[in-house]
Image (cartoon, rainbow, N blue to C red):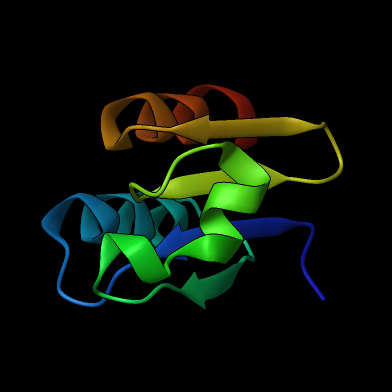
Length: 80
């Protein structure tokens, strides 16, 4: 089991951007697929305080972040 979890929505271009960055950096991660309706995204709200995706959680470092550009920058600078 990976220590990195990405909360993502199928078909979300911002989520795909993060998936691509993680894959390009050859980083192992788990994907938690969220529900299409914001009101049904209880798990991502529990971990991040919001219902928007993508959200990346790194259990090893205690990092939790949202917004695809910030996540990609974190992946490239801290994980790659």
